[in-house]
Image 1 (cartoon, rainbow, N blue to C red):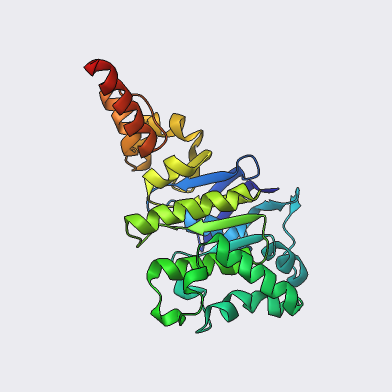
Image 2 (cartoon, rainbow, N blue to C red):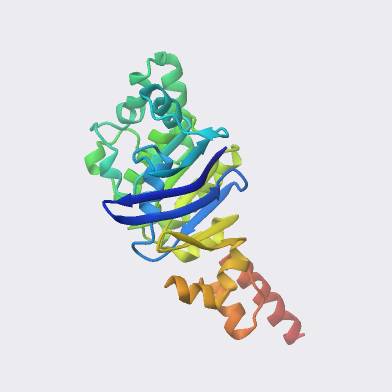
Length: 271
């Protein structure tokens, strides 16, 4: 269980997180959305133990987080973070060594390291470029290497900061497929993103943050259909939701579902 209880965090005298109560164990994929400065990045750093709240707590396995060296090491083997810029997490010039870095630090046997690295590369669809120098990879490929580096820890929770930022449409589609495969293995994924269409499509639950507080929480269709809340948060509606709220079209979860339903309607009208 990963959650927060009355979580407060301030930089100097300015509160950034204000009494947050969140539970990330209830849904496979949880989305965090909000305008710049709403507290998403600070929340991620609290969840990963990089920052410590002045009041309230991050709850791990039902207990307040242990900030001792041993406690944080245990947390980071189960709660892994992938930052927006993959360069922040890549230290080696060859992919296998970079992905295996954390496991070697933990003293994992080499045979087990090889197995986990192979599994992670397959999961992020990176086997075909695993022998290329990292400096020759595209931005999207580096993101996949960074995710693989988190997956080898076999973490139960994966925090993804802007996973589709800087990706072209094909790369974005690949990233969605990767996230779905991670979730299919029984893991929880928490996504912080300004890509509102991504959050709508892939999330099972959404928290909308505004000035460090929860403005709204619920299923994506319900949350994003609330025009007033979206405007208050400084957000735009996902395009599929906008078609529903403004034009009265059926509410669809994905572009594929939308076009399939439109084709069926067109076929019925033609016949």
